[in-house]
Image (cartoon, rainbow, N blue to C red; front, side, top):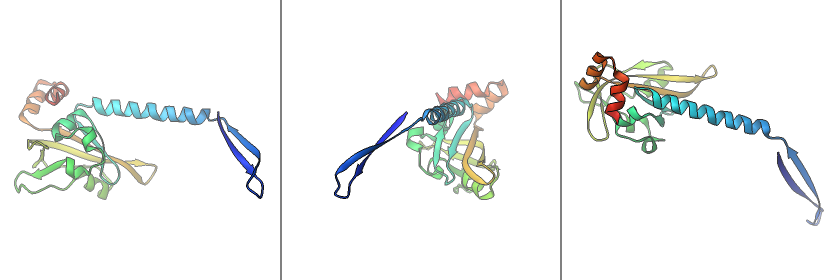
Length: 178
């Protein structure tokens, strides 16, 4: 129950009475708790995915990152949150060595899922280059509004290829990230 009290002043500003209003906010608190639980489930899901996952808002600013994405980019979730994806996810064309187009920007502009070309490498914050495959997909809220975009990143490094051949990609990806 939420209770508010408001003074009732007379024309001279003296308090002549008090109005009280009580509201049952049980349903509001229940909805808040459900939203928090849903967010925790989402975070647990994103963290458990064996490929790199980065979410952005509809302006391309980093929202969430899992451990694999942190490892590949060299940025922690806390450091990257709110930054432009292009600052955190630095990708170049292997042939020209020029900066590649931000896949989230492309996905937002095209309003559809886009994949990176195979000639793209990610340059981590520490300068390590990772050949990768990646897809960016906008997530729609309702019929038209894009609420968020998810970037899924899979390393194509020799270590990842060995793990794939052994059929233990998820285990190896997390071991490389640790």
